[in-house]
Length: 458
Ligand code: BG6
Image 1 (spheres, rainbow, N blue to C red):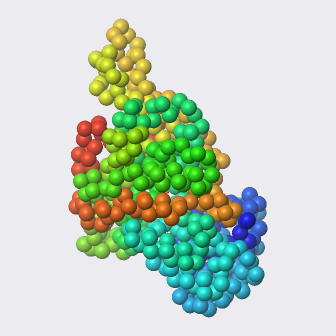
Image 2: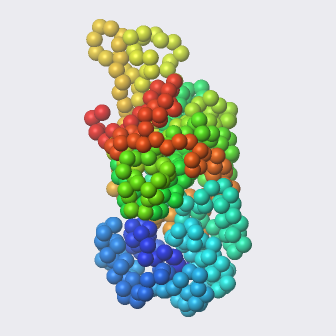
Image 3: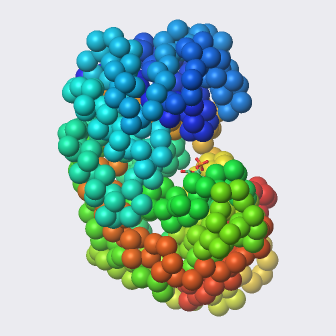
């Protein structure tokens, strides 16, 4: 059944400005938001001020659609208060005005999750309700388990929606679709033909004023435990028996459980030069702003195939790309070809979207000498939904397919848990480079990193 009110904690925060208001306007524009929308935060604002704040946020981080915004503004209410104060929740009950199936979205720092859950429960706001929990979901396996236990005190697992906005992205959903809507990929999608897999999530910018948050988290927790492992799962999982939420998430779980927990030798951590000067960062911080990891998946399909993930801030460009290297032909019939013949599958996930198939063709001339070419499909992305629009719309309808289940989130933590914090040394790298040179050593023997390029001619 659809939720009959949308409540979000952290209404004056960064996430609300950048993602939630634009997503709410998009939902309103699509005629999918005919319920009260209640924002809660500490600032002493009126409803009118809150609406102005929402408008300014959309103008800054999206595009104002006057009609859709008016529809949203009419439904926007503001509740002021501290999350530890029972009065805040009394005011929420009044604002809910009898709504029986609210969706509560915790767009707040994880340290406040439990306080809000308790406040909601004490005020009787959890009955019939759903809850959306922002990432990071805990900071290690133990805290994730504790958070799951706290949530389950008040909500049934079927009412808990753990958000990972990567799963709401069109090209990420396409990984699942492309793999299982076509038959041609399956015969080569295993250790028989795949040599290695690389996932690169590069960002050319630094911590962008989020130093205090980032210094508590680091790259492994910020994007690897969630976004990157989710992408890996979609690439490597077996076909689910249906596209039903439980079937899909159970299949993902099987894959997560087959990934060997990381050991320090599988990890290279880096920190960009100048990170210590960022506001909110400890002067002696050894938190990583770059990480490269080598993963092993112990299944019949993937035994012996290394999966590499590399993510970082202040790298040469902003781009997320998957590169699947295929094995060379069994016989070197054309010995003048380079030893690593260019057979690969490439998925560009952002900033543009593409699927590429790398192959070799004969170069014109007398000899049997080839050249690498790539067949590229570039879907039209103009109509793509905002990830948060898709995910919040799904949560309002109770569709959990694109949300992480309790056992999956714990299994993902299990993989990174042994190497969190200072398990591997942190090496300084120069902003604008591809991280510390040690990341090249991690991949030695498997060719080299494929650095994505934004130049269409290469
Ligand atoms: C967030 C991380 O989850 O994802 C950020 O906290 C990161 O550090 C962001 O920049 C990247 O998301 P996107 O959608 O901009 O690629």
